[in-house]
Image (cartoon, rainbow, N blue to C red; front, side, top):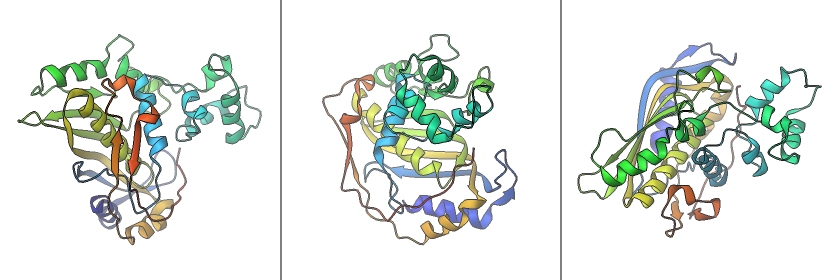
Length: 295
Protein backbone atom coordinates (compact mmCIF):
# COMPACT_ATOMS: atom_id res chain seq x y z
CA UNK A 1 0.00 0.00 0.00
CA UNK A 2 2.93 2.33 -0.61
CA UNK A 3 0.89 3.76 -3.51
CA UNK A 4 -1.55 5.25 -1.01
CA UNK A 5 1.18 6.79 1.17
CA UNK A 6 2.89 8.22 -1.91
CA UNK A 7 -0.38 9.88 -2.88
CA UNK A 8 -0.71 11.43 0.60
CA UNK A 9 2.86 12.72 0.38
CA UNK A 10 2.28 14.12 -3.10
CA UNK A 11 -0.82 16.02 -1.99
CA UNK A 12 0.97 17.52 1.02
CA UNK A 13 3.96 18.58 -1.10
CA UNK A 14 2.28 19.66 -4.33
CA UNK A 15 -1.35 20.40 -3.49
CA UNK A 16 -2.92 23.84 -3.43
CA UNK A 17 -4.71 25.15 -0.35
CA UNK A 18 -8.38 25.70 -1.03
CA UNK A 19 -11.59 26.68 0.71
CA UNK A 20 -14.31 24.03 0.55
CA UNK A 21 -18.00 23.43 1.12
CA UNK A 22 -17.50 22.23 4.71
CA UNK A 23 -15.56 25.30 5.83
CA UNK A 24 -12.63 23.18 7.02
CA UNK A 25 -10.26 23.87 4.16
CA UNK A 26 -8.18 21.38 2.19
CA UNK A 27 -4.93 20.85 0.38
CA UNK A 28 -5.84 19.40 -2.98
CA UNK A 29 -4.52 18.08 -6.27
CA UNK A 30 -6.62 17.51 -9.37
CA UNK A 31 -6.19 14.16 -11.06
CA UNK A 32 -4.37 11.29 -9.36
CA UNK A 33 -4.35 7.57 -10.10
CA UNK A 34 -3.23 4.53 -8.12
CA UNK A 35 -3.29 0.84 -9.09
CA UNK A 36 -3.64 -2.19 -6.78
CA UNK A 37 -2.87 -5.74 -7.89
CA UNK A 38 -5.54 -7.86 -6.22
CA UNK A 39 -3.63 -11.05 -6.96
CA UNK A 40 -0.95 -10.20 -4.40
CA UNK A 41 -3.30 -9.47 -1.52
CA UNK A 42 -6.36 -7.55 -0.44
CA UNK A 43 -5.70 -3.77 -0.26
CA UNK A 44 -6.87 -3.09 3.28
CA UNK A 45 -4.63 -0.36 4.64
CA UNK A 46 -2.01 -1.54 7.16
CA UNK A 47 -0.57 1.81 8.29
CA UNK A 48 -3.65 2.33 10.45
CA UNK A 49 -6.09 -0.15 11.95
CA UNK A 50 -9.09 -0.80 9.71
CA UNK A 51 -12.10 -3.06 9.97
CA UNK A 52 -13.59 -4.94 7.02
CA UNK A 53 -17.08 -5.40 8.47
CA UNK A 54 -18.37 -1.81 8.07
CA UNK A 55 -16.87 -1.67 4.57
CA UNK A 56 -18.61 -4.89 3.59
CA UNK A 57 -21.91 -3.92 5.24
CA UNK A 58 -22.00 -0.64 3.34
CA UNK A 59 -21.30 -2.44 0.05
CA UNK A 60 -24.06 -4.98 0.75
CA UNK A 61 -26.37 -2.05 1.53
CA UNK A 62 -25.54 -0.49 -1.84
CA UNK A 63 -26.12 -3.81 -3.60
CA UNK A 64 -29.55 -4.13 -1.94
CA UNK A 65 -30.52 -0.79 -3.41
CA UNK A 66 -31.19 0.60 0.06
CA UNK A 67 -30.89 4.33 0.79
CA UNK A 68 -32.00 4.53 4.43
CA UNK A 69 -29.41 4.43 7.22
CA UNK A 70 -31.61 2.07 9.27
CA UNK A 71 -29.90 -1.01 7.79
CA UNK A 72 -26.48 0.36 8.72
CA UNK A 73 -27.50 1.68 12.13
CA UNK A 74 -28.92 -1.72 13.07
CA UNK A 75 -25.48 -3.17 12.32
CA UNK A 76 -23.61 -0.46 14.23
CA UNK A 77 -22.12 1.01 11.06
CA UNK A 78 -21.74 4.75 11.64
CA UNK A 79 -20.29 6.07 8.40
CA UNK A 80 -23.45 7.72 7.02
CA UNK A 81 -24.98 9.05 10.24
CA UNK A 82 -23.79 12.67 10.06
CA UNK A 83 -25.61 13.58 6.85
CA UNK A 84 -29.21 12.68 7.85
CA UNK A 85 -28.52 14.15 11.29
CA UNK A 86 -27.63 17.49 9.70
CA UNK A 87 -30.96 17.40 7.84
CA UNK A 88 -32.79 16.48 11.05
CA UNK A 89 -31.26 19.46 12.85
CA UNK A 90 -32.85 21.79 10.31
CA UNK A 91 -36.35 20.35 10.90
CA UNK A 92 -39.13 21.46 13.24
CA UNK A 93 -38.89 18.06 14.96
CA UNK A 94 -35.38 18.77 16.24
CA UNK A 95 -35.26 19.58 19.95
CA UNK A 96 -31.56 19.59 20.68
CA UNK A 97 -30.95 15.86 20.31
CA UNK A 98 -27.31 14.85 19.98
CA UNK A 99 -26.08 12.74 17.08
CA UNK A 100 -25.92 9.75 19.45
CA UNK A 101 -29.53 10.30 20.55
CA UNK A 102 -30.68 10.62 16.94
CA UNK A 103 -28.96 7.37 15.96
CA UNK A 104 -30.33 5.57 19.03
CA UNK A 105 -33.86 6.60 18.04
CA UNK A 106 -33.38 5.31 14.49
CA UNK A 107 -32.11 2.03 15.92
CA UNK A 108 -34.93 1.47 18.40
CA UNK A 109 -37.75 2.17 15.94
CA UNK A 110 -39.01 -0.27 13.27
CA UNK A 111 -37.95 0.31 9.68
CA UNK A 112 -41.45 1.43 8.66
CA UNK A 113 -41.78 4.05 11.42
CA UNK A 114 -42.49 7.53 9.97
CA UNK A 115 -39.50 9.03 11.82
CA UNK A 116 -37.13 6.44 10.29
CA UNK A 117 -38.64 6.80 6.84
CA UNK A 118 -38.34 10.60 6.95
CA UNK A 119 -35.10 11.24 8.81
CA UNK A 120 -33.13 8.07 8.05
CA UNK A 121 -33.50 8.55 4.32
CA UNK A 122 -30.55 9.84 2.29
CA UNK A 123 -32.36 10.33 -0.98
CA UNK A 124 -31.54 8.51 -4.24
CA UNK A 125 -27.89 7.80 -3.41
CA UNK A 126 -25.70 4.92 -4.61
CA UNK A 127 -27.99 1.94 -4.07
CA UNK A 128 -30.94 3.58 -5.79
CA UNK A 129 -28.90 4.50 -8.85
CA UNK A 130 -27.22 1.08 -9.02
CA UNK A 131 -30.48 -0.86 -8.84
CA UNK A 132 -33.15 1.55 -10.11
CA UNK A 133 -31.48 4.35 -12.03
CA UNK A 134 -33.56 7.53 -12.12
CA UNK A 135 -36.42 5.43 -10.68
CA UNK A 136 -36.96 4.04 -14.17
CA UNK A 137 -36.38 0.38 -13.34
CA UNK A 138 -32.86 0.25 -14.80
CA UNK A 139 -30.94 -2.28 -12.70
CA UNK A 140 -27.35 -1.46 -13.59
CA UNK A 141 -25.88 -4.29 -11.51
CA UNK A 142 -27.98 -6.97 -13.21
CA UNK A 143 -27.13 -5.52 -16.61
CA UNK A 144 -23.44 -5.47 -15.68
CA UNK A 145 -23.42 -9.08 -14.53
CA UNK A 146 -25.20 -10.26 -17.68
CA UNK A 147 -22.68 -8.39 -19.82
CA UNK A 148 -19.64 -9.72 -17.93
CA UNK A 149 -20.91 -13.26 -18.40
CA UNK A 150 -22.19 -13.09 -21.95
CA UNK A 151 -20.30 -10.27 -23.67
CA UNK A 152 -17.00 -10.10 -21.77
CA UNK A 153 -15.10 -7.86 -24.21
CA UNK A 154 -17.72 -5.12 -24.27
CA UNK A 155 -16.45 -1.63 -23.47
CA UNK A 156 -19.78 -0.82 -21.82
CA UNK A 157 -19.38 -2.62 -18.50
CA UNK A 158 -20.27 0.57 -16.66
CA UNK A 159 -22.16 1.50 -13.50
CA UNK A 160 -22.91 5.16 -12.83
CA UNK A 161 -24.00 6.57 -9.49
CA UNK A 162 -23.96 10.11 -10.84
CA UNK A 163 -27.42 11.14 -12.02
CA UNK A 164 -27.77 14.86 -12.82
CA UNK A 165 -31.56 14.61 -12.70
CA UNK A 166 -31.59 13.50 -9.04
CA UNK A 167 -28.28 14.73 -7.66
CA UNK A 168 -29.88 17.66 -5.83
CA UNK A 169 -32.17 15.26 -3.96
CA UNK A 170 -29.23 13.36 -2.41
CA UNK A 171 -27.96 14.04 1.11
CA UNK A 172 -24.45 13.72 -0.36
CA UNK A 173 -23.92 13.60 -4.14
CA UNK A 174 -21.91 10.51 -5.12
CA UNK A 175 -18.18 10.89 -4.61
CA UNK A 176 -17.29 7.50 -6.10
CA UNK A 177 -19.35 8.15 -9.16
CA UNK A 178 -18.41 5.93 -12.12
CA UNK A 179 -17.26 2.31 -12.43
CA UNK A 180 -15.94 0.42 -15.43
CA UNK A 181 -15.00 -3.26 -15.56
CA UNK A 182 -12.60 -5.03 -17.92
CA UNK A 183 -12.20 -8.74 -18.70
CA UNK A 184 -8.72 -9.92 -19.74
CA UNK A 185 -8.14 -11.32 -23.24
CA UNK A 186 -7.82 -14.86 -21.89
CA UNK A 187 -11.17 -14.48 -20.06
CA UNK A 188 -9.44 -15.30 -16.79
CA UNK A 189 -9.32 -11.98 -14.94
CA UNK A 190 -11.64 -9.13 -14.04
CA UNK A 191 -10.40 -5.62 -13.29
CA UNK A 192 -12.21 -2.49 -12.14
CA UNK A 193 -11.55 1.21 -12.56
CA UNK A 194 -13.33 3.72 -10.32
CA UNK A 195 -13.58 7.39 -11.14
CA UNK A 196 -14.03 9.31 -7.90
CA UNK A 197 -14.89 12.99 -8.31
CA UNK A 198 -13.93 13.94 -4.75
CA UNK A 199 -11.81 12.05 -2.23
CA UNK A 200 -11.17 12.65 1.47
CA UNK A 201 -7.75 11.04 1.28
CA UNK A 202 -7.28 10.27 4.97
CA UNK A 203 -10.76 9.09 6.01
CA UNK A 204 -12.51 8.09 2.81
CA UNK A 205 -9.97 6.74 0.35
CA UNK A 206 -8.79 3.69 2.38
CA UNK A 207 -12.45 2.73 2.74
CA UNK A 208 -13.12 3.25 -0.98
CA UNK A 209 -10.12 1.17 -2.06
CA UNK A 210 -11.19 -1.79 0.08
CA UNK A 211 -14.86 -1.47 -0.88
CA UNK A 212 -14.33 -1.58 -4.64
CA UNK A 213 -11.62 -4.21 -4.41
CA UNK A 214 -14.18 -6.31 -2.51
CA UNK A 215 -16.85 -5.62 -5.11
CA UNK A 216 -14.46 -6.64 -7.88
CA UNK A 217 -13.70 -9.92 -6.11
CA UNK A 218 -17.40 -10.64 -5.54
CA UNK A 219 -18.26 -9.94 -9.17
CA UNK A 220 -15.31 -12.00 -10.37
CA UNK A 221 -16.50 -15.00 -8.37
CA UNK A 222 -20.11 -14.91 -9.57
CA UNK A 223 -19.13 -14.24 -13.20
CA UNK A 224 -16.44 -16.92 -13.44
CA UNK A 225 -13.26 -14.83 -13.28
CA UNK A 226 -10.46 -14.00 -10.86
CA UNK A 227 -9.98 -10.50 -9.52
CA UNK A 228 -6.90 -8.87 -11.08
CA UNK A 229 -6.59 -5.12 -10.56
CA UNK A 230 -8.35 -2.17 -8.97
CA UNK A 231 -7.50 1.16 -10.57
CA UNK A 232 -8.48 4.25 -8.57
CA UNK A 233 -8.75 7.50 -10.52
CA UNK A 234 -9.51 10.57 -8.44
CA UNK A 235 -10.60 14.03 -9.56
CA UNK A 236 -10.20 16.27 -6.50
CA UNK A 237 -7.85 14.36 -4.17
CA UNK A 238 -7.65 16.33 -0.95
CA UNK A 239 -6.49 16.23 2.64
CA UNK A 240 -8.47 18.31 5.12
CA UNK A 241 -6.32 20.81 7.01
CA UNK A 242 -7.26 19.29 10.36
CA UNK A 243 -5.87 15.95 9.12
CA UNK A 244 -2.37 17.17 8.20
CA UNK A 245 -0.67 15.99 11.39
CA UNK A 246 -2.30 12.56 11.47
CA UNK A 247 -1.52 12.02 7.77
CA UNK A 248 2.13 12.85 8.42
CA UNK A 249 2.14 10.31 11.24
CA UNK A 250 0.66 7.71 8.91
CA UNK A 251 3.24 8.41 6.20
CA UNK A 252 5.99 7.73 8.75
CA UNK A 253 4.74 4.18 9.28
CA UNK A 254 6.09 1.26 7.27
CA UNK A 255 3.42 -0.73 5.40
CA UNK A 256 2.94 -4.34 6.53
CA UNK A 257 2.15 -7.40 4.36
CA UNK A 258 -1.32 -7.45 2.85
CA UNK A 259 -4.07 -9.71 4.14
CA UNK A 260 -6.07 -12.19 2.05
CA UNK A 261 -9.76 -11.89 1.21
CA UNK A 262 -11.92 -15.00 1.65
CA UNK A 263 -15.33 -15.30 0.02
CA UNK A 264 -17.73 -18.18 0.48
CA UNK A 265 -17.18 -20.15 -2.76
CA UNK A 266 -20.75 -21.46 -2.67
CA UNK A 267 -22.18 -18.03 -3.49
CA UNK A 268 -23.08 -17.84 -7.18
CA UNK A 269 -25.13 -14.62 -7.24
CA UNK A 270 -23.94 -11.17 -6.24
CA UNK A 271 -27.28 -10.61 -4.53
CA UNK A 272 -26.90 -13.67 -2.26
CA UNK A 273 -23.81 -12.50 -0.38
CA UNK A 274 -24.21 -11.81 3.33
CA UNK A 275 -21.70 -10.51 5.83
CA UNK A 276 -21.00 -14.08 6.93
CA UNK A 277 -19.71 -14.90 3.43
CA UNK A 278 -16.95 -12.28 3.57
CA UNK A 279 -13.80 -12.45 5.71
CA UNK A 280 -10.08 -11.71 5.71
CA UNK A 281 -7.09 -13.68 6.94
CA UNK A 282 -3.66 -12.61 8.24
CA UNK A 283 -4.49 -8.94 8.66
CA UNK A 284 -1.71 -6.99 10.38
CA UNK A 285 -1.74 -3.26 11.01
CA UNK A 286 -0.32 -0.39 12.98
CA UNK A 287 -2.56 1.25 15.61
CA UNK A 288 -5.68 3.30 14.95
CA UNK A 289 -5.54 6.90 13.76
CA UNK A 290 -8.38 9.35 14.17
CA UNK A 291 -9.66 12.31 12.18
CA UNK A 292 -12.84 14.39 12.28
CA UNK A 293 -15.40 14.00 9.49
CA UNK A 294 -16.14 17.25 7.67
CA UNK A 295 -19.82 17.35 6.71
